Image (cartoon, each protein chain N blue to C red):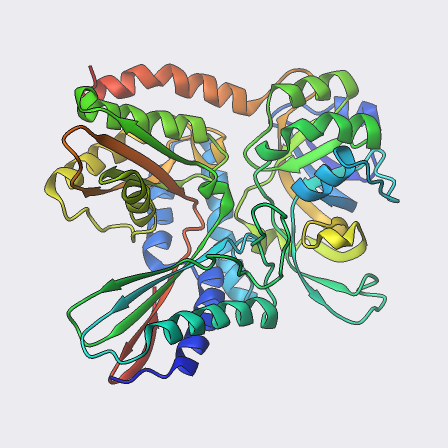
Length: 202
Length: 290
């Protein structure tokens, strides 16, 4: 259980060093991805001008306020509340995110499935769990919205955040086939019969 | 008691923002209870982070969760309440729109086919406004921003009488296993039993959004929710699906009579950010609560 502080972007070697139950803190750049922008990128053939190679992407759509452009708010958006959404809906986008855009880390809640675990193993990636529903805390780690692309999809735009001390977050799926979610699910399903018996189910 | 639609609009606006920022006391108490009993080290940390977040949201006047949800308004109309129904509905809708634009809040509501977001948190049929009646001289508006992580974990099973109560118990356990960490546990598991298919799902939502510490008014329903509450926390799903004892704050059950040939059961879940706010209009004025 090692703690890693990552100044983004990172290399394949850095992500392959991660093991389930390690912790990670992200510094610098973090991209915000979501259902609509991934449907646009991977199903509808739209392209982004962002270079996401070696970067981390978080499953999010933030609450923002429109403000005048300034050094503090270069896009004219101030972050109000940035939190994390359920990852499972975006399972099939893990592989294209990695092999087309070069993303190394996916940050989300609730976990991803077998296809993603395979992609992490083959291409060198990991899934890092944030505590869902704790957006007020998460927002304190976001310094600014540095850039935004595909903004016609707002709030599901492609966001580029500048973050400071974003973590510690828990490595929940690694590039060595480890998944905390699979482990918990397997154990929970093994307890099912006993739980039902205690409820008197015949 | 005459009610001014402009005041209803203000209250509907205020309730949406309040619900997103301040967690009800019964949910905070639920967190304290779970944290005190949790035996898993990771789960203890996860619960600790959630409790810290509640404080940060209040201290920084920020939203607890970025998901502004689907806004739901539950209206209870008592005796002597004087306001045209259509004006009441319009005022609530305007208040919801104004909260979204004026705070501002992320509009999480889109047209289901075009996926177009009007940035008002409103659309066809949304916000749903449910009307009920009571005996007292008051008007109560309850606001629930229902997050999608938990709402996407909703199920209906039209079981048959031959499957009995066992079908209901098994279904609840299997839904909790299927939901895993996707619902942002610890959850309130809302179970609707009986009725028609639509009523059954409505009951499940009412159960999921009922305050912690309250019991089903039906004796059989109350007994069932008690044993199911203990049972789900033996599965080990834990907060965020990362393992632990604290899978759910509680299982809540609501029941309705059903047909001799039917045995419907529905499950709707509420996430740990179990947000709600309410306001009561009486001859003495408006009072906010949860």
